[in-house]
Image (cartoon, one colour):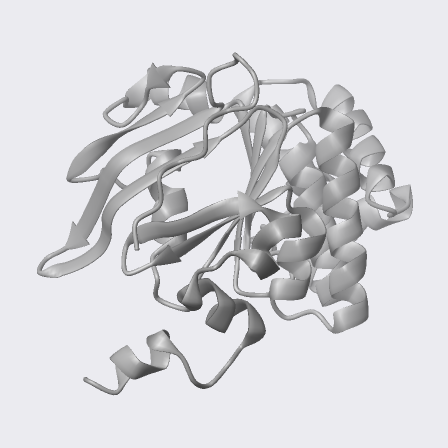
Amino acid sequence: MSAEPEKPRDDRPPKIRMRGVEKRFGPKEVLTGVDLDVRPQESVVVIGGSGSGKSVLLKCILGLLTPEAGEIEIDGKPVTHVTGREREAVNAKIGMLFQNAALFDSLPVWENVAFGLIQGQRMKRAAAKEIAIQKLADVGLGPDVGELSPAELSGGMRKRVGLARAIAGDPDIIFFDEPTTGLDPIMGHIIDDLIVHCVRQVGATAVSITHDMPSARRISDRMAMLYKGKIIWTGETAKIDESGNDYVDQFIHGAAEGPIRMELRKL
């Protein structure tokens, strides 16, 4: 079931490169040899069922978890065991939209958006607020929203604020963790359109994890399926319906019958 990473279409090295990445928690193996390339300025969505290791994969790239084996590179430089200020420098190029937005309830919306600018880049508050208001405008929110508290926001507005924060520093890479979770289909579609617009606007490379297939199709150039700790298929989004992989076919169509269910029955 393993899948060889696709070769880049140009001579540039992958923006993100993973080879043989393994991660376990005690006896439980979560990642069992992940190989994945993400090219500069492309949007890759990692799909897979709940508990398949998608969030762990992201945390390994971010340095929040350290793999037991394998190597992760960003811009051609190994980052698997980078710590301290060196790790902070790597993560300064990364934006993140968390699953539930993860806003600070004690801060007004504009300060949530500007948090990385103020705390990470030590930007003056007035300048940071100006950028925050602009980023809020980029996601369709007016300056008045910047003065609200997160508790006053709807679920869709919280996602928009989270997206504004993710792009506030014009990052090279943006991660999206289940970006449409908790949203109705219409708002989910709106958030997807904003993600595509904002990623293109800042020229970022995007990696998303989700099991929402309509969302995955809208925001991705390529998809990769994670199953039992490995990437078992990668390919262009437009070609996923012709993957020829029974596991992928079952997952993307939500079929009750197929190899994934057959293996569950053995438990």
